[in-house]
Image 1 (cartoon, rainbow, N blue to C red):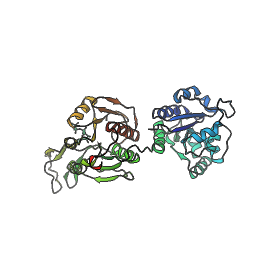
Image 2 (cartoon, rainbow, N blue to C red):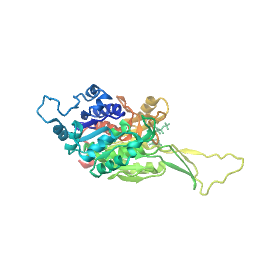
Image 3 (cartoon, protein in one colour):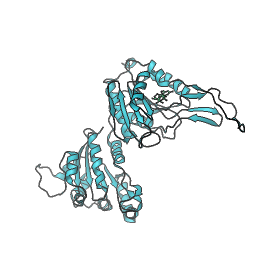
Image 4 (cartoon, helix red, strand yellow):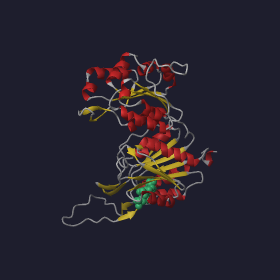
Length: 407
Ligand code: CTP
């Protein structure tokens, strides 16, 4: 996702410096080249060798150390960077940056760069809320410096409040959002389904499924950013529609079926992340059902169409169909069964009982299953997961992906 991108990562002497190791590791796995610059004090908290091993490059510390290459290090790094990230950014670093002080390798490089600067501040609540820090922050923001966090929580000093550094996963997510503007899906038409469906019982009651729509919306946003023409068929959710995406709103599973029958044939890749209700009430009451004291209420449910199966039946040779399987047990076996029965090319399985996966949260832990492979991915943001799913789907589609009618 970040192949060919150059991240210059500054590490200052906050206790959260150890978390920068995970940031480097994650960025490196996404294909980024990383140069780490540490302040002298930061080297007392984490050994440079850790960063050297994770980034596979020498760590830069001292402005005046003799180097084998002829380039002026702080200038060459400043020019090479696609982003300059500081993890953690202490109050001291923010103050120096705000006033243009350049007294070590990190601050000289920050002053010289034209690349976007992103800070992950971390400090004690009192230091964070101090007028000096807040006014430095305002100056930096005014100059276009980006920040991730800080979050609130229990701090290393025992205080509870704002100042806790954002989690590595969120910092990496912010870098992806900034840098991963690949256009490898240009010319492709993709359709994503998202959110739950709602089945009416009477004018004031309904049945639905757990689904925030976050995964589907992240998929739509990522595909649009990568250049695809995106149709998002969505059940009722509380999320903004990503810019440039065509929204088709649906309510019930029957609506979803109708929308898919209308739009599916035209697509190159279809990813069905919606959680459609499998059943609907046989007879929706015209009026509010009144409580019958002491009597149980029995609703007769009838099966809804299996939308993915119906789309699979009409699958065209050039199309790639991807489904989701939210499971609570026998994840891989259940997902493989769905892969086959719904004529899918890939199924994204997740164990919704795991912490960090499933409904409402911003992260997911998915396994990508195709006919020939089972690929478990680590916990990642839904945005990162979306890009991994597209990577796989685009690879399955092969290039070029052109609808026969448009050749
Ligand atoms: N799906 C669908 N229509 C349905 C139910 C599910 O299109 N009526 C799609 C979902 O969008 C998802 C895939 O099928 O891509 C798997 O959904 P899931 O709810 O996990 O599977 P079901 O087939 O409903 O099986 P079960 O509920 O028994 O696990």
